[in-house]
Amino acid sequence: MKCSICKEKAVIELNYLKKAFCKEHFIDSFEERVKKHVEKNKLVDKNDKIVVGVSGGKDSLTMLYLLNKWYPGQVSALTVDEGIKNYREHTIKIVEKFVKEWGINYKKLSFKEGIGFSLDEICKKLEGIPCSYCGVFRRYLLNKGAREMKATKIAIGHNLDDEAQSIMMNLFQHGLQRFVRMGPLSGVVDNEKFIRRIKPLREITEKETRAYFFIKKFPHDIWECPYMQFAFRHNIRKMLNDYEKDNSGTKANIVKSYDSFIKKFKKTKYNIVFCEKCKEPTSSNICRACIIKEEFYERTRNKGKTKN
Ligand code: SF4
Image (cartoon, rainbow, N blue to C red):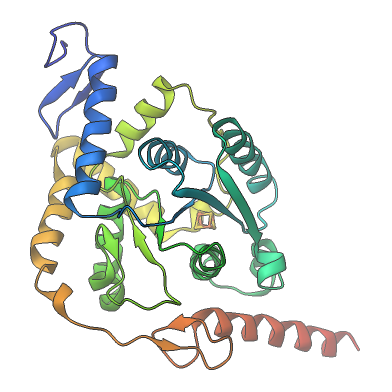
């Protein structure tokens, strides 16, 4: 297998692009494609203050590195510690080392301090799927934390695989509101309490981010979230990976089809309201975070009564 550009030995073959690259040309192509995506979709403005949501995984660290390289002085990092024992404490160490090395302004928030309980505690009390609680509170705290950091955009590390999975998940679950809010710049309303999200890696596959990450010798984590097995996304990922094996380009085609289809819907204005309890932006009278909190405390109160 030879590099499509210099004909030297290739280190990666990208079937969906019908190309192969040596190390040097892969790095160039990767960065060029991410930059082009950011510019084409006007994801970053010269006055933007970007807060990158960093988990310590390859996608978020790669994105943090690139945005900080291209937009120095405009980028900060924010980690949300969900409180997942034997997992998050390790990845946080990686983030702390990374931001120190690159001199990036950094803030950390936790479920425990921001919500009142950790994800581990929620999972002991409520029977739902851990990822659904995790997603609600992580989005909630990311938005709140980024606003406190005076951000105009939140960057999240969704790659092409993640985006294809999200499209399918929303279709399977009839999540039409979420479905129309997706895209490179997600959210459909401009509101000072709601910080819009950008996805710089949206046209790059997971395989490529992994390769970029290792070639760059960034510190990598070996830990996997213990709740991963319960995630609906996990099943969709397996399904799409299997399909992609025999039908290269499937994930890219899902995202392309979504983009063509959604163009006209993006013109629709959606009303944003504020939660009657916490005053954070939401799409209903009481936000999902407050509903889960109430459920959690209700269980705690009932458990106390049984004991007495
Ligand atoms: Fe949260 Fe689920 Fe991801 Fe674990 S796998 S960090 S529970 S969303």
